[in-house]
Length: 402
Image (tube, rainbow, N blue to C red):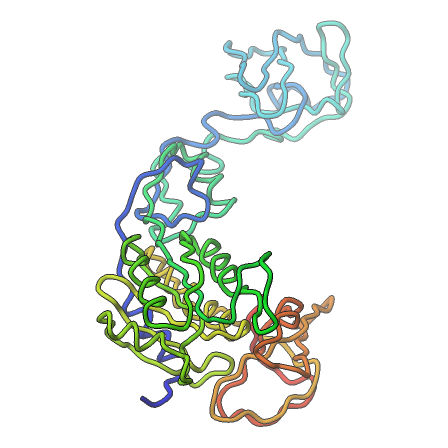
């Protein structure tokens, strides 16, 4: 099977995304969840004319002259309004967020007034209508403010709550089973033999799954044998996983058995091998209703492939219309780069942001896909198209922020 482009690979992955069922959850648990239907405001915000400052609610026309004296007839605080109509010559002590009494149209700032017993004295005139938040200033009942497919963040969650929603209709979280593979791996915190290394890719994948709105299911580490790998795949099926992510064993070596075991279980292969660096040996397919992504074993390859393919797949399953959105942005090279070969390259780079102008990305000299420290230090991936020519320092480029 020949190498396919990154763009073609992503298109195939997203085309195979199976929409997930929806559910209704409490808004307190809706952070990072994806809306399954649009949200309309169930109330008007603010629901009354509200004071934007501490001061006195007055008739604006009556405070245009310094020294004017008004009788204080009551108080309006947040949650405890003054429920009588304001008459001429009267004022109501008012606090931020409190309802403006009927008949008042202006807030005289407390800094612009002095109090003499039950009388307020105007020390500085105020513009008519100032410091009043009119009913519906933010939104009105029936306004459609959040779209289907929108992923709720801290800001949109606050909006949904203010709109009056206590429960939210969302897509179910994709269950993503993660199976690390390789006799050389041990779990973090365990003693490794001289021939072993500590597994880390499963933690990286799980973190990306959670950030994308999925639920990570850890299946542990499978050894390099048909039996061990098959047990892991069966466990994913038993758990009802929507996606199975395997880590390692996707290449063509004698110990790279993942594709063979998946085929024996009945996987329908979508593609294998992409024209990219790092991450050429990536498996994509389906096993019944379960999507398969077989990521490379090298840490950087695994991470880059997860960012480029796993995250969009998780978002697509939740109905996110922007799942295929290009995450790259323009930048300038901080160092010169060599000509590229026929594979699309993703170079780990330090990222600086000048006070003005585009960010500057400086690829590290060493780009070995096993170097976790470089990956952790990098601020961005510099994208080098296939057969791109050598570029001098200062040239325009495209980056994906990390």
